[in-house]
Image (cartoon, one colour):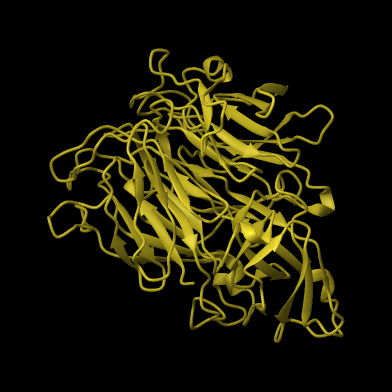
Length: 531
């Protein structure tokens, strides 16, 4: 199936389908000992413009599109409800779900209110798939700036938001509750934590934990929550400084590793000191180990002051931070400035004070409010967006950005070739062992110490919007390698709380160099996904 990205309003994106052709590297001039093996490479696509060229024959602007990564072209997708400031996630069959949104719009792009809307998009291979919309009354409340997280049962957890747009949440518009999609019998469930964390509780950070509970963070507070029994299991210490909208930071659950018994650590970085145009962005990160007897936030530098960062898990399991700015707070029309152009790589397994890699290929494009980024199957990073003005103004200091960038991390330039794989099944079940074929030609031989350098990772890129990466997840997989280095026997995640049902991209790594990622579904039953 061909690779496709789905792009909705303000280029909030979700990787939908496919696996890239098995080219060795995205760069035809790839050679060993490339200077990019230290810095990586940044490539820009498109042109500078101030108005959306994605339009229908009627002249109406599209606010949803299917993006082709091979050709850097797109297919506008009609939508009737406003997806602005919505959330998103995937069901176990691969269907993308968009939840909530914004107000009625008119003039150059028309949209009905999307506050309570639910939208389904099921990928296809022939460019005929379209949205199915449930316009109103499908969620129990209006939800602007909610969060969605995939659950072990295969459905979606929808949390929080406000009943209408606002610079910051207020008691009269706060929605302190959660619900599920598809709907569960209990309907809307009151959630007091979203009152405790006012006013900085929009787009809360949520991660499904291997024990089946949820890590939930808003403002400076975090809890472990049992959604099955509707109770808080544990309250965790407050982190230094507010990290939630509009003092927006970013959060990542570090890759889960069977060698560490799938122990969970959470990293939260960036933010801002206050709601002021010249407020200093936060230059700290906090990391907490939930496996500790008494978990505490270990504070670290963020290297640069950075508000509205995007934090991604790359193909090798290390983290990349891009986008953001050094002054202000999240929002439109002059609320933030002084963009941060320099990517950073964070290596979780290194000791404190040795985890950051600087000096990477930078950009000259300001990526601030409404920017996004996503890890691709070929190991590159897709970067887009920045929408700091409303209405659009070509003379603005930071006009709306329509160019796309691809960042190729250093691991794509370390060697002249990369691992090659074949015979990967489309669907596996939890705990299932399966064989794939491996080609390490040019990388290793049977006489080398090759087995210790092989790892297998499974990435779910998730849904990106407003510095959120909902349901992003990376799990290392147990495996055995044959003596001739040609057959890998891989074991799927042991249960659905480790990797909720649905699709991911599987990478085989050799000494940190990833293969092309291949889409694979992990399900409770092989019949859950009929292909």
